[in-house]
Image (cartoon, rainbow, N blue to C red; front, side):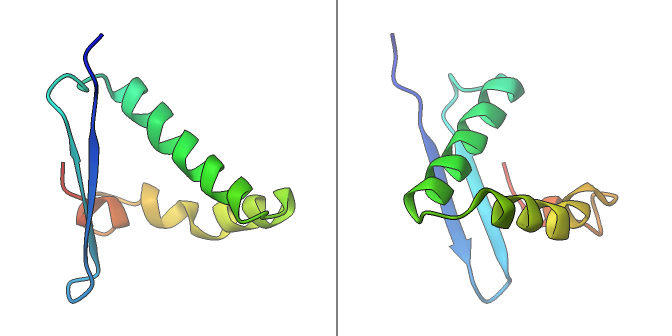
Length: 78
């Protein structure tokens, strides 16, 4: 089995995050699972309460689901 990689870059001046996936990581479901697992692992690692995570998602989710040009996803690069 070949290793798969995810690179995350930040550009603080432009307030952007760039995410690069290795070529063998093309399935969007697999990408989503990896990114979701990373978030959950991070939250558990800092001992974030479940309610805090729920509130975090509730507060910021809409910013990621607006039309691409207006959303935070519009600032993410593949």
